[in-house]
Image 1 (cartoon, rainbow, N blue to C red):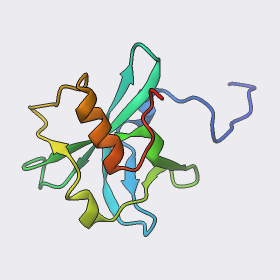
Image 2: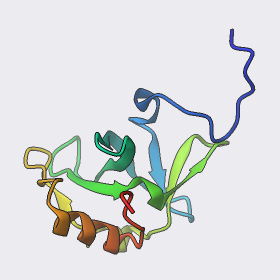
Image 3: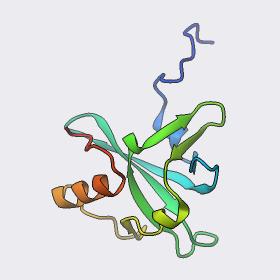
Image 4: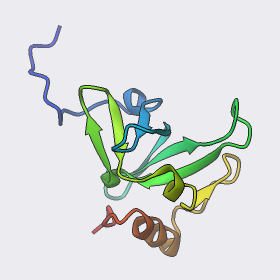
Length: 122
């Protein structure tokens, strides 16, 4: 048993984040985190890949959401994205079998602009 105090900003394993629910401030369920994307050059978490839509995994769309765009709700163990379901439907998403080239600077800037989040590398 650890003797370290638990803080709301204490480090967590990526496996503890994957599968966590994503909601908006109205507590509408938006999806869940499927993957964490880390920039190996900066050692920063770049994106949480969130699934949204579909039925039983069919027609599901993925979204690379800048990790800075989330607030973490400790009490509910969920990530809060300040975005309506309707706005998220127009987000730059991708098919689970066709991930974007995350090394493309324009793609990165467009994603950060959509979520009104400063780029993780700046």
